[in-house]
Length: 431
Image 1 (cartoon, rainbow, N blue to C red):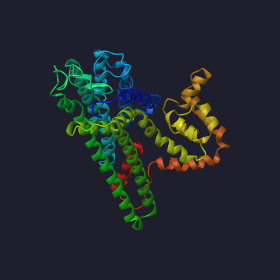
Image 2 (cartoon, rainbow, N blue to C red):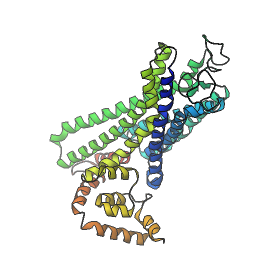
Image 3 (cartoon, rainbow, N blue to C red):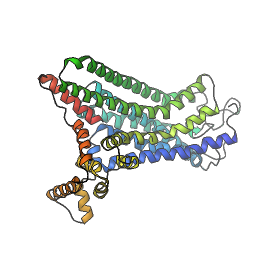
Image 4 (tube, rainbow, N blue to C red):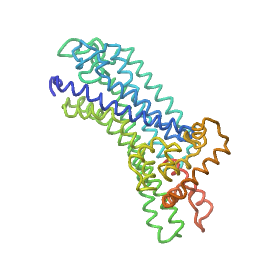
């Protein structure tokens, strides 16, 4: 791609993020809406709070990428097609791209949370007290500070393709054109300090923790096979349930990591190759501009996956679209009444969430129910569906049974019993 992208290529680079960026905004907004509606339950769990922060940051980043043609300055050598902005909007875009690196910190913290709870047995409250406050304060403040410094020092400029970010000033300066006033010799180093150094650190944390989680799953599986012939059937069943829970958590963690790597590994590799070897190709740039704004879109499907699988496992006849819909937004009473016991069970098993039957009924009839009235209406609701959904409830019983406290077999000593119960609680919290 010597001489820079052609006019047609530049249009693709500029306008493709307009689609992918808004897809990511849609995905992240859906996660935020789902968490907020179930805030009384979901915000009690660290993984949901981390996902909430990640989704907010992703919206800022995705919009900054999608609106490149509105924010990039017109009339400069590196102006993108249809540019409508000026240097002030350019630096605003650079600021929001800078704070997008907070999302990497949330991804790393999410992986660290899964690792500490699964592999180290850390309690959720301990993570909330000791580690989570640092994630919500240190890394946001650090990146906001970098962003402000970049604006003040005029570090964010048009960079030859796509959005404004770290580059020399004035735009278009260089050895072959005219002398740079600022950052002509050090912008590559500043790019590493402001951006790539942190992305690479987050990737190291993510890789190490995820490998440790899968090693834990592997050792559990090997131990389960080894001792199956020598332990009681109840103990064997407990081990298998714990193994299934830990494997589900490992898969969920890996999927979030995959979404992060798809979105951020491309820019890292592209810029490292360009810096070290000078290699640039249009196809690699296209991969970068397509995938970079899409993390929120990927995260939305990963977020809905556990609820979707539970619904489909409980009732294979349930429509896929209904399962996807209610994975994000649990049903109202009328919807669950029409859909059957799977949705009823989802409502009954989530006390305290935004769609608690007592609260929803009070809104429907226009009067405030007492807690006793709410329980009576819930009982009537269950009785109404009892005759038509007996077979479905049988399948739900097996699913809900897995989520109860694991039964400890006869003959297991007190220490092992306590450890098994704690592990079971940890696995259920994470999934």
